[in-house]
Length: 174
Image (cartoon, rainbow, N blue to C red):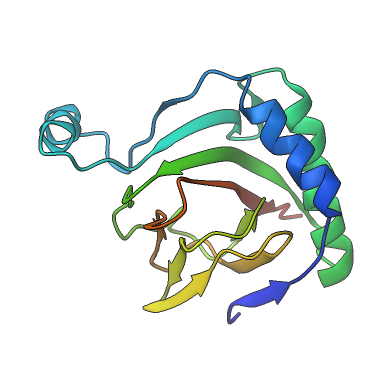
């Protein structure tokens, strides 16, 4: 599966409504590694992966929020468009990047039965690097790719903030 781009999944007004909801939620410092010492050292050096809210992880609700309804709607639209009936939500990460926040290259899952989606809530000069190619943030666009592909989030330079949703879908193996 190459990177698939789907545009205009939700109207502008709904994307902005989601951003307003995010503005009222507590965020946590995001990380790509469980190495706490490395994470702290990076923060002290001014390197940050941004912030996130994890509302669903490993298929379980971690944070009961209206954000899960929005994430489910976005997931279902994508699943219907791409005929992914045999997939379910594994994870919902709501991301906030400030100027120059970047994640490290990483995979979301190591197995081929997972699909990653980065959904952009607004247009910014940040974006997502997937398999060494940069995809800019475009409001309402979903970038869909296998979860075992190297990628990273790239924070904005000129824009003050970047909001996105990272969805992982898991294939339900029969």
